[in-house]
Each structure stands twice: as C-alpha cells, then as structure tokens.
Figure 1 (tube, rainbow, N blue to C red):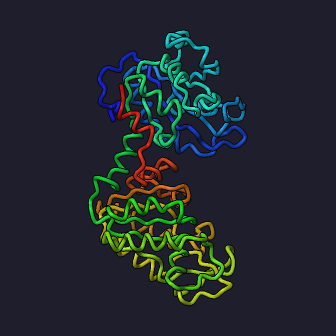
Figure 2 (figure 1 turned 120 degrees about the vertical axis):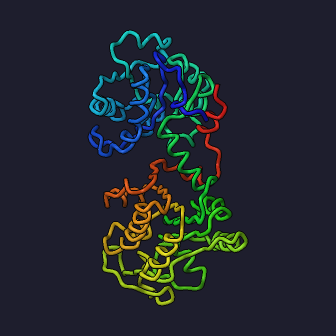
Figure 3 (figure 1 turned 90 degrees about the vertical axis):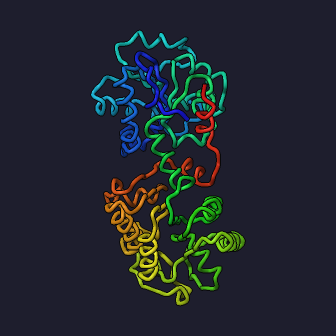
Length: 395
C-alpha cells in the first residue's frame, strides 16, 4: 500500500476519495459524527495540497434504488461547517457524467457524488461502473477501511484503474491492527466478549498462536463456565458450542497461550435487577450471569499490568444496567491508567465496546479505537480484505 501522504505530485489533481460516511440519521439529521470527524485530517491534507476532491460514499442499504431519506445532503452540509468551505452535492446520474472536466463547471473544489449505493452496480462489483468512476478523477484514495471487507466497485475494482493510495485514517487503522497481529510488542493480551462465541471463533483461533493471554468475558464466557462443569442458571448461552470451546481450550494449551474465563460473577434474576456476587459453582437455576466478579476483575487488571499490548473487543457484562457495568469500567480504567504512563499500546474495537467508552467519555484515552466493525473483525481473523488487496495491486 502507498499512503497519499507520500505522494508529492498532487497539485491540481482530481482525487476520487472513497470515504465511509455511513453515519446514523434521525429525521435526516446526523446523530453521531464520529465517522465524519475521523476523515477530516485526510480532507484537510488534500485541501492543503490544492487538489480537487470528489467524494464517493454511501448511507444505509438502498439496494440500487434512490431513497430520499438516504441522501448524502446532511453530510455535505456538515462537511461545509467543519471545513469552512463550500461543498457541492452532485445528484446527477454518475453514468451521465462524461469525465473529470465536468467539475470545472463549478466554483467549488470539494464535491460529493450522491449515495453510491443508489447504483446497483456498486454492490455488484461491476467493472464497467468502476471504469465510469475512473473517468472522473486522476487519483484514487481509499480512506474507508471500514468498507474494505466489501467486494464493491468503488472498493475493489476502482483502485486497479487509477494510481491508488490509502488515506490518513486508513493508515492509522492498519498500523494499529498490525501492532496486534504482526508487529507485536509482548506480552500481549486479548480481552474478548460478545454474546456469540461462533462469531469470534476464527478470531480467537488466529490470535492464540500470537498472544500470551486470551480473556473470555461477556455472554460467550457462559459457554466456558458451563463446559467446565458449572451450572449457569438461565444465563444467555449459545447452543451446540461445546466443540468450539474444546477446540479453543486445546489450541491454547498447545500454543502456550493462557486462556482465562471468569472465576466469579455478578448475577441477578432479571436484567433490571440488583447484583449479587457468586462463585461460578454457586449459581442457582433462576439466576443469570450479567457481569464478572471482583476476583475476576483483579485477575484481569493484574494481567493488563503485565502486558505491553492489549486488544479489547466486547464488554465484560450487561453494561446498560449500571449494576453490571463495573467489570467493563474497571477494565477501561486499568488500560487508561497504563496508557497514561506509556506502559501499554491499546486497541479497542466493536460497537458495544465503543458505545461503552463513549458513554464514559474516555474514547480519546486509548491508543486506537476502531469503528470499522466487520472489516476490523475480518482483519483479526487473518482474512485478506478486498480493499487492502486492491491497494496492494495499485496502478
């Protein structure tokens, strides 16, 4: 991959900039600007280099149909305020625009083409559509890491047709993920949660040979607690996963990776109830596990203290109820404490974990917080992402 920051000859070039501006909208108003905020450095860099910028992006899943509620107009207006520059939304059919000279008809230097998923060809990964897009610029830049697990025309086909580069946010994402998958500073620990172990099995299997400790928390820890002979009451559990747990346990022993699951927990009879500390062999049939207990918290924080690198994906409990947020909060505070003294490199990913950190207003206290979702998880599985592969095969 080549970073756009290394390219010297940018003055006057038309840049096709693929972004992920798929922000949440309520009544056509943006309710969370995180994804916009993250790509501003790339936009400001290209503005300083006196380029003409043509943004390609999407909102939602219109499935090749024009849906007014999924227009990029609110994003265009938000960018104007953030950049203090005029931004032109182009709602003309892309297939009717002949070439990049089209943009000379306007005074603006920043353009947004209307929702690229209004075109069925985008998700069909249509080469002809990609060639039409290529006619509209001189250089392609991908700053949409979070879309780069998609085999779509503007992600996989387009970079093969123009000189292609990664954007600043894309570089940050890949560099952070490399530090927990290939350029590792040990000891390295993974704290992984979520309700379904089957969705994380390939991540865990890929990380075990590289990591010193894998800590299982959240709903998926219930599978381990039950597998090792304990009653879990009416706790959330994914069925038919004993073979997966056995495989993870066996692989961790083979690779010398310490596998940790809760030794004590917080339970309640319903999600809205108060908490009670229980050892994992004391859980009653009418109780459910909703957080990790104090002994488990101490064990995890001690491991974090001994780690140089930490990956955290998935909260430790049902944090929506403050009675069961303590485990997640303690983990966050311990990582932050070690970050402040530069003793640790921390990477956080996953929607629920990011939501927790946002609610605590501590997102900026971690080295890197990923909002990439599926791309983040697939990278951790060791999969080759189409968007990265395409940039590696650049023109």
